[in-house]
Image 1 (cartoon, rainbow, N blue to C red):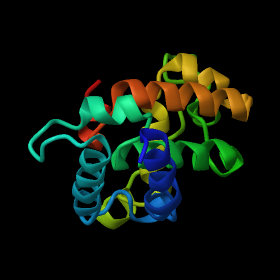
Image 2 (cartoon, rainbow, N blue to C red):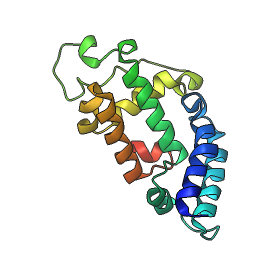
Image 3 (cartoon, rainbow, N blue to C red):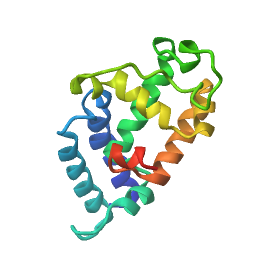
Image 4 (cartoon, helix red, strand yellow):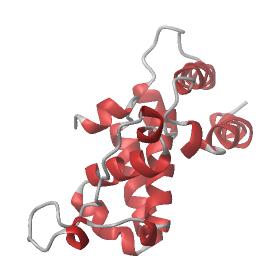
Length: 163
């Protein structure tokens, strides 16, 4: 089969399953198992060896790794539901560099910190400002965010936060 047919098949059968409800399970410990399966499928599509690095393969196929897909979905959730979140400018009136960031509430429970509300705020606050400024226009925001995530191809949230 051609690469286009394999890619369409991937999006039909694999991507749809991975992206379903990813904002709820994407930050769990089980997401690593899903990511390993996703890498195996990518290697099969490209017909590469089982030890080959997949980072450039994801970019070549324009497919987001599982954690990048989680970041994408969490950011779409946050921007769609901005009225549910407080900005730092609502908490204090001092004009700082973080004024346009979302207010991160204090949380002691790891379960709450892994939830979409808390992790969504952390992910949103780390988005480059140029992309964050596009959040008013949903289509432009999605395109710019997807291009950024495809270019970086993040394998973990730690990698995302360290860039």
